[in-house]
Length: 309
Image 1 (tube, rainbow, N blue to C red):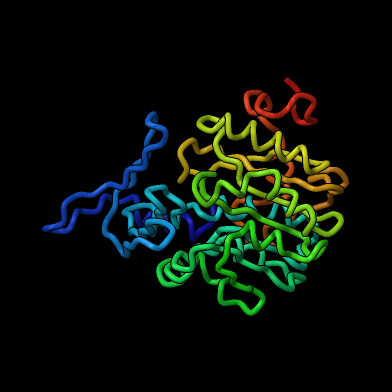
Image 2: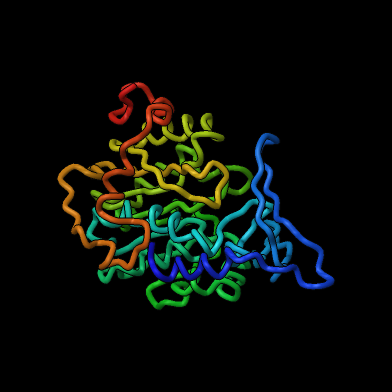
């Protein structure tokens, strides 16, 4: 464990008295009426209703600052690096770093921050429909949103599906879909039409990476997503990471490409985590993340190369 994470944890593990006059508060996220997740909250930093969603920034006692959209926990400062590193580097590292990339969603800026670690990156476009998420993230979680002011980052406050549909064919090396649950505006980000738009926008050997939810609580959604991806891309592989802020902890992601395999013939420096400054992602984690437990394999289509059960 890195020293900064140890210090971050130590500062928050000591019981902290609730300030006099402030009632004890808990953020409670409930999902599907069967499970919940709670964080002890110190105070509200900002709360507003944008044209698209309810946005809340909170300060917690242990997890640092917290972003909540429509009552769903999006990130905590304590562990956001796990999700953002796995979402981006598993797709970017096999490319040697993309030259041109698009991040769909991800208004907090974490995915952009990670992609900017590659020197060969020329441009990354953040396609985020809700500008308020971006501006408030820059204000309240600058450690996550720092890359959004980088000159290589282009902000487009538009629907991500429309941005990809209008992209020049073959113009992108990497598309990272950092979406919320596939409901409401995000429902268009799991359709065959959307995946075909990404395929058209990707250069030969280009890669799509996306979060594909919890195998414990979203098995039906996972089955549907991988069946749809398989109708578009030649190579579709699932990988996983441990994301403590999300109900279920075990979180899945997809790697999809017409030409590129995520591990075959791949040579990653054993010190890639040093080069990139990552705290979760490494060469060993990259390879191990594609080894799936049998119950997760069972969610993949029949005949899928990772399905050994």
